[in-house]
Length: 199
Image 1 (cartoon, helix red, strand yellow):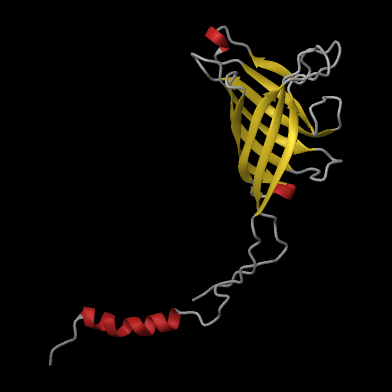
Image 2 (cartoon, rainbow, N blue to C red):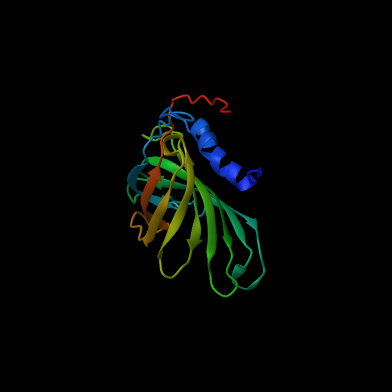
């Protein structure tokens, strides 16, 4: 009598294996209570140099000075602040803390990386956004990427469109950028998920 080949045994046994391994529970292997992604837009003004008398540059300090052409390699650590309106004397709602580095060898191009930290008395108190991108002198507008977030903005991603605006508060130079912040985020859930071994 001929012995069945291994391929025939495999074909006969496969349905039994699949039937045994196929879960009958709709929540297999664990229930998914996945929160929905939310979307929000914020409109704020970033102040690089506030227009305050006798204070020329309090929001940043040179960390690396470079003698290269157009300052290639120069780095500043910054603690810029954000307000709801263009006036630097308005209530501060957040701070952009990080650094900017002159990364262009033939043209001015500041690589910028900072974390926007919302102040304690704002509606997003303690929440953060991780932001990076470039600042170029011309054009005076551009975009930054939102790469992450915490607190109210868990798992954030999105963009920040910025454009330079003229400050008319005083004669002191105040680099003001109008920010259109577009955020997608997924709130954390308090549901506990229990994993069980499946054999």
